[in-house]
Length: 113
Image 1 (tube, helix red, strand yellow):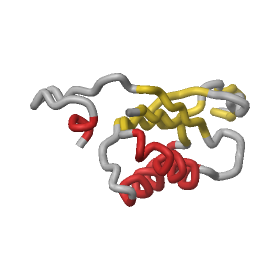
Image 2 (cartoon, one colour):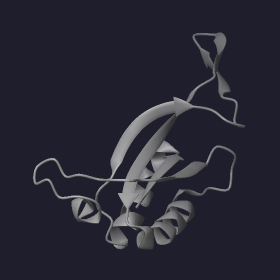
Image 3 (cartoon, helix red, strand yellow):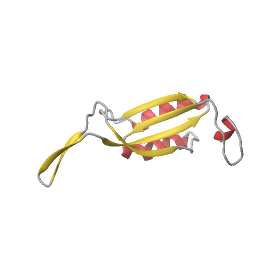
Image 4 (cartoon, rainbow, N blue to C red):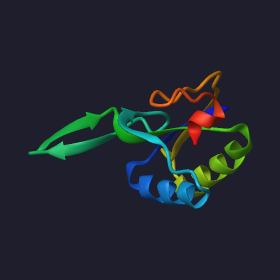
């Protein structure tokens, strides 16, 4: 099993969600986060004063999948989240040793269904 963590632009969330649903992946955790990379934030003017926003709003999507679904999921996340501009985000993949469904006690891939 693998955990996919994707950091994307907020307005791309619905596109990514629909693309993953088309693959039959419906479970995910979504968090609103802030950060920056090469984008380095941007400046805005508020009431005549200029100030810098160092941390930009992003969305973090977390999904745990069986190994055989990981490559397809990554492909659709990249395709649906890409704008071609700096700040599109990143995807991280982690190995998951165990998964346990609290309600039933099911383990590993059975806990993911």
